[in-house]
Length: 138
Image 1 (tube, rainbow, N blue to C red):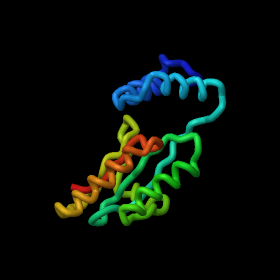
Image 2: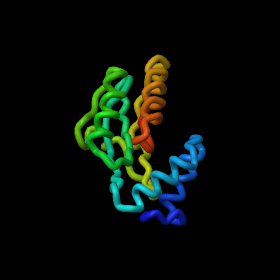
Image 3: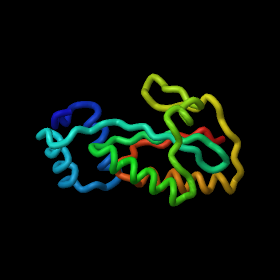
């Protein structure tokens, strides 16, 4: 957004950061860093299969694809899962008009798998690079 805090995307990111108690200094420093052209953010989509065979789509926003991929891989492997190939999980979803993922095909999972999935999603969402996590688990 070139540092324009009135732009919808940046405004949304600032509100999300504030809701997560990110200090104003950190927010301002990040805006300044990217406004000066020091780095370009790009959206990356990762796919995986989780507990009970449910499909997972992970949306990330990063200035370093390699770092983001390694962080996502680490979280997945720590929980006993791995990244899937392109299209391996997205086939079970469709993009909504507001650019989110909606499951076309759902997978019933056990209560135990549901708990594992909850832990995995929480850990992924705690990652700074990850913006959203979608799953087709019932």
